[in-house]
Structures are given as C-alpha cells and as structure tokens.
Length: 303
Image (tube, rainbow, N blue to C red; front, side):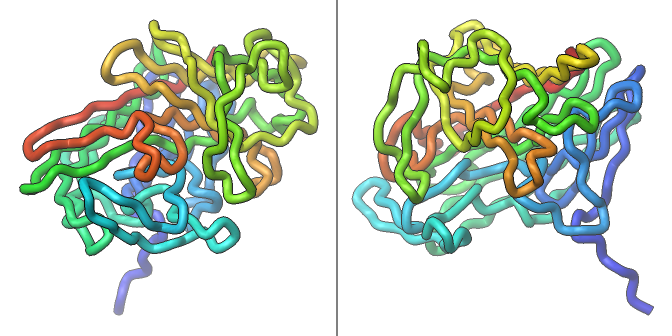
C-alpha cells in the first residue's frame, strides 16, 4: 500500500523556552511560529498546499521577473510565467521543491537543496537554510547559496512569512518600520519609480494602524545598522518583530503585503536582497561567480 504524501513534506517541530515552530521541508517554509501559544506567524494547514507562498524560501530570485524574460551577460533567457494576472515569473524556482534534512536538533534544523538548473536558469546552486530557535531571541533564519556550477549566476533571495499578532486581523494592528523610499509599480507590479516616504501614506516611521490600507510595495532606504518591522495589537500590547542584521547578511529591500489573498489575517514581511524585476533592471542584483557564496539572515521574535 502506498503511503500518502504530504504537500508540505515533513513538518519539523522546534522548541526553545516559550517558543515553538514548525518548519516544512517542501519549500523550506515556516509553517508556524508561536510564543506562549500566541501566533507570531500565520500558520498554514500542514495537510494542504499553502496559499500565497506562505512561509516559503524564495530563490534564485524573490518577487517577480516581467514576462518571465531577462537578459544576462548578453544572452536572453526565459523562465516559466506562473502568475497569469501579471504575466510574471514569481518567487524563484525552489518553493515547491522537497529540501533535504542535513541536521536536526530540538531547537534547530538545517535543510539543503541542489538547484540543477533549467533552460531559463542554466546555473547550479547549492542552497542551505538553517532555522534556529532560541528562548531569548526567537527564530533566526539563515539562507546560504553557493554557485556550484561553471558559469556566473544572477541571484536574489527572500523569505515569505506572514506576520501575525495572535488572531487579530492586520487592519486592527499597528505597523511600524523605517524606510526612506517606496517603489511605485505598474499594474503588473513592475517598477516605475522610487518615491520618498516622509509625510506620505507610506510613512510608517511612527506606529500607526494599518486600517483598510492595501499594501503590496517594496521599500528601501532602510537603516544601515539593521532594521525591523513591528506588527502590534494595541489592545493587548502583544507584538511580532521581524529584524535583519547590519552588514552583508542583511537585506536592502523590504516587501510589505497586506495579505488580501489570506483574508488580511497576516501581513507578509519579506526581507529581500533586490527589488522586483532585478533580473532585468540590475538593481542590487547579486552575481555569483563559480565558487562564490552568499549568506542572508533575519529573525522573528515576540516584541
């Protein structure tokens, strides 16, 4: 008799102090994260395909490539378009892959994936993701890519957690983060221009209720010494904080999505190394030469 296969592979349970987490091997995803029974990340059903890329690791590009087509070092490549409404290639190539468990303990797990390449991305990457839970600092995610092939590879990375403040709708939560600029986009969510956030509706430097505001925007001009996004329930004071470090393991872009596809029950907070359509614009695009490595990290904790 064949055993049933879960759409999320194996869910690995982690525990440290008051924190618990579930990590899915398919897509190297955060299935759940809570503190004292209070959800910090909107959980998804381990027996169903997660909607709206919930919790997924996004590589070798985050966000989207316009038309699924790009030019790299004089050659044109095409990758599959997987968002019909915008005609774009969304969120990379590994979100539905089964990652392998390379190490596991009560509070951490290491997952690995080998991207062998395809006609639209003919490069070989070794991907490594560590999820580490600590009683005093919450969940730290570290993602490393090594170019294991023989050609230079364009690269970007992100993660797609939906932050939650318990069971409170995001409309009723306060949001705060510091970003000097917001990227305005066209109807395909592709870049148009950067605008200053100061004094605009996109200024979240002071905590304010999200209300009915719809967001699906990339922000930059983030603090050089690391940055954080806080989602807070003003009724209870409970808060969830996503933070990134300063330096090379940090990220210079941030995507905020108000979660309409999930009923606005969680807010996607995506630290990104590059903006939408970076494979075409070249903005903050990482180029991994053969043997090069890149590391990226962020943390989620109770505030």
